[in-house]
Image 1 (cartoon, helix red, strand yellow):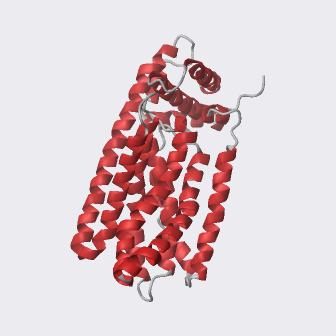
Image 2 (cartoon, helix red, strand yellow; image 1 turned 180 degrees about the vertical axis):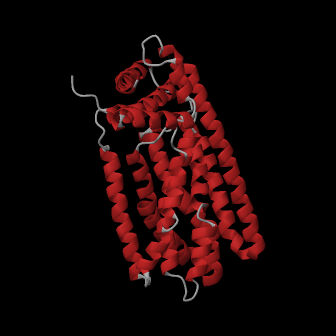
Image 3 (cartoon, one colour; image 1 turned 120 degrees about the vertical axis):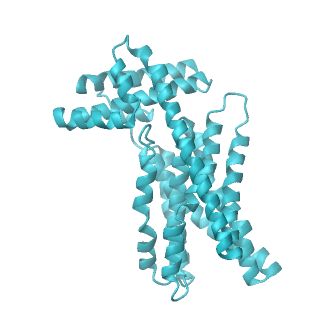
Length: 370
C-alpha cells in the first residue's frame, strides 16, 4: 500500500498538491496585481514603497484574527491564498477599471467632477467591488462546495478576499494622498476602518455558505443575492456617510459595529453547532476503535484540543502531536460529512468514499499518539 498522506485525505483529493484551478487563480491574480500597481505608477502615484508599508502594517493582526476563527475546522491553505489573491489582484484591477469608466462616462458628465466622484463612491463602487469580491466565493460554491460547511467558512473566505482587496486599495489611497494628508488617510483607513471590507464581504460569504448547504431542489441564488445585498448596503452606507460629516461617519460606524456583533453571534452559534455534530455522530465509531468517549470530550472544546496537543508534544514529541492534530481535523471533517449526507448533499457512495479514508487516517493517527 502507498504511504498514508494525511494532507491529501483531509483535502479530499488524491494528492495534497493544489488543484490546477487554484494554481491558475493565484497566477492570474498575481498578474492582475502587477498590472494594477503599474497603472497606479503610470497615473502619477508617489511614495509607493511607503504606501505599501503602511498598507501592510495592520495586515498581520487582521490575518491572525481571521485565522483564529478558523481553528475548529481549518480551511485548506491553498483556498485561502487563492481567495486573498483574487481580492488583491483580479477584484482590484477590474474595480479600478469599472469605477473609473463609470466616473468618466456617466457620473462626471452628468453631475460634474466633484459630485460625480461622490456618486461613484456611494453608488457604483459598492456594487462593483462587492460583486467582484463575491465572485470568487461563488466560484467556491460551484467548484469546492464541500469546503463550505457553515457560516464560519463563509466569513473566513469573505474576510480573506476582502483583506486582499483592502490592502491594495489602501496602497492606492496612500500613494495618491494629497501632501500633508497621509497621516490622516492612514488613521481613517488603517486604524479607524480596517474591518470595512471584511465586514461587507463576510455578509456575502454567509449567503454563499447558506446556499452551499441547501438541499437538492432548493434555489441557491436567493441566499447568495441576499448576502450580496447586505454587503452592498453596508458598503454604500459607509461611503455615503462622508457627505454628512462626523454625524454620518458615526452612524455608519455604529452600523458596522452592529454587523460585527451580529457576526460574532453567528460565529459562536456555528461553533456550538459543530460541537453538537461531533457529539452526535462520532460516538457511533467507538465500536471500530477510532473514537472513545474521552476523545469526543476532547474534540468538543478548542481549549481541550490545544491542551491535548501540548501534552502530547511535551511527552511524545512533535510527530505524535502532529498525528493528534490530524486526528482532530479528520474527526471534525467526519462530523461535517455526516451533516452534508443528512441534508442530501452527498450521495451514499460518495459518503462512503469520503468517510473510509477519514476513518483510516484517524486509526493511524491514534496509533501514533494514543
